[in-house]
Length: 329
Ligand SMILES: Cc1cc2nc3c(=O)[nH]c(=O)nc-3n(C[C@H](O)[C@H](O)[C@H](O)COP(=O)(O)O)c2cc1C
Image (cartoon, rainbow, N blue to C red; front, side):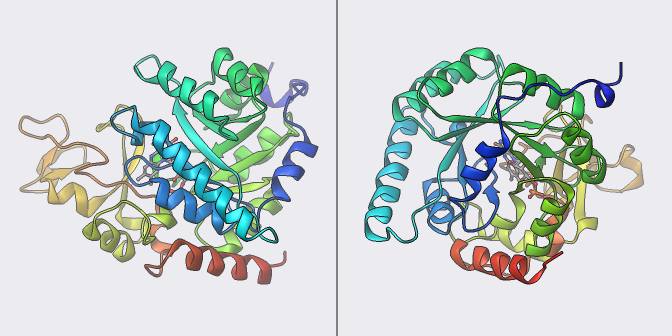
């Protein structure tokens, strides 16, 4: 039987859950977790401005730093709420890569559970013990997915929300059109649903909601934020880029991801299948071709072409909010 025609899974995530999370946000957006780039400064600024901020657990190095980072985020947001009861901060999230190659998984889960992190975003399928641990203290588990089959598997595992990562996303990207994936997931999933992939305007956030998603999941637009941990050259490259400057390759990490072409070329690399087509550049896999994804070769999604200005997070979110309010469908 086709996944799209099989009966609804009885989701743990419910419409009511999505609504209750949404009422705590100024804008229906999750600031997506970004390797290296997301630090407590970025997360705190996103939450204060009223969107969910998130951080990959793996950004805290050594691993012992994770406890301090989460404590810093919690204390700063609690102080903000005490000073601004009329505009409390949005909840924050920690991202876990649920793969056996992640040797820190158990350690990081203990820290997350001790601190009762409100939202855990799991990449790859969420194992039952992670879901159980987060539900044990009343937290929410969101799972990012790239296909309806993947979404169904996560829904059946008991996650509270799904995030459809579609074509053109920064980092590890999906390849499906949001116009296909969101309605396909909605055939069996009524719970909270995010959509990521090249959303960089308030109109885009509105479009995501009209399509059937509850939240936009936005990474690339925040690379240029003052609070983001990216080099100046990286921020400039994102500002100068258009969607044409983004190349998708699975050669750097083994999984399809989007990268800024100028950052590849700066390392003497090309994503073209035959190196001969671009003299002077080596193809991945060719002898002498090496560079570290994320650190030396920089990632961004198709939405790089929409990035207009460097600014503090609060100003970027205010622009999105104004655009979102004026783009009534
Ligand atoms: C530089 C960069 C690093 C990323 N690192 C992670 C990561 O560590 N974990 C993760 O789940 N997603 C990561 N992502 C993906 C984002 O969480 C999200 O799916 C994506 O940014 C959404 O698409 P957009 O960039 O077009 O807004 C990364 C994205 C970028 C641009």
